Length: 530
Image 1: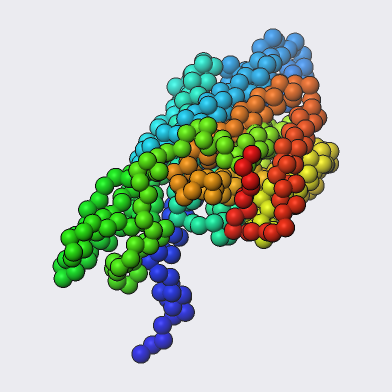
Image 2 (image 1 turned 90 degrees about the horizontal axis):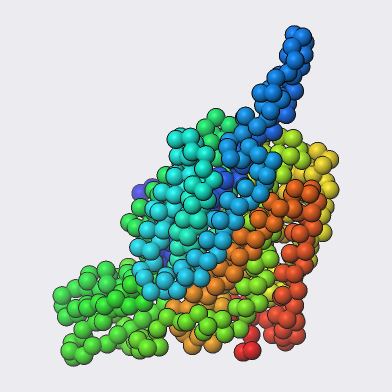
């Protein structure tokens, strides 16, 4: 008999529980990758909506001058003819900033409602509807090119609608991944998982950049179709909670055991299974990861008694705010996300102007910021797990980020090589705290010990933290559009100020962590009540 290949031996060492965990990890990773993939095209297309056509007009003027003809008014204003109306005027930066603001403001407002709604609806259906409608509005923006639409209000309406429906994504996937993974090594797991943000930005830049110069409408239509297709996959395959699999496997019990399964809809549509035993008494149980391996086994003693329905009621908005650490991390994320989203929406245009590159090359170069963000998010998770100090990890990275941003504004004028290096470093230091707060910190606070085991707060807490951060994400690109008219230096001063403010908001939590005599990597946010 031939020996079993080592790869197969490795695969069979994983039990069914681990396979479902890995599947959920990858599926939610791909789902939120498609969300960011569909957000990125607008930053790539900006330089195409308002082109720098001075070189073209100069060539036309030289050609006419050599032929002895006076340049006409149309040739003098050729720089406006090659731009997409209404972004062909001198106030194009303000108009582009208004489009960013409309999306992000709608996203910030909708996020507060999204978490509360998500706690009360099946996550799989809620996320599916959000992804399908997001794909629709993303495609609709691209159809503006196909049907030659030049109304600013059309594009603002699409951005507002898309911002609202995209709020279904983050609370849903964080709740799902939090249901499947416990607190041990959560920083590492979520640091790896949160790289979907940067992967989506990179793929969105590459896809949008491929068509930006020839047909920028496809830069939106293709990502819109991708997120719509992922929405269908979500509907078919997403498993919200390990308990959802109980009913499937309880039905496979042999008839000799005389065990019948009855189910009812619990929180977020999760199935709570009641097993009928021989003594004709109903017993209920709920385990964190009740997944059969080689055979289905019914425990004689319940592992954990299901709490009463009143105890499992969804947490209120004010109740979530009273969880220790929620307010501080929410306000910190406001400024951290302000910096991150300013780069997301304005970095390609800045590279186009500073390095004098075309839209495609600037879009490709901007992906290095996201590559650095992947490394920064993973490092932040690993370090915070090792130290057991989430706030301190974020504070150190924010402290280093501010001078790095100033260095980037200076070095980016000295060639491509230094720009590449600084983009990687800036990406890691800017996105590291942002990634840690929106994933591991949100999951820690959503399952805080003060909740006494009520995990239904996770979606609401996640929405509050990310919704507050989204206020900064809305303000940052808008301020960048206004300040860039006076020079890009003012934009970088604004970003450095935001980093310092984010650092100041964490000082109380940092002091508590450093003064603590014990370090608990598995539960880094164990703070006393206010």
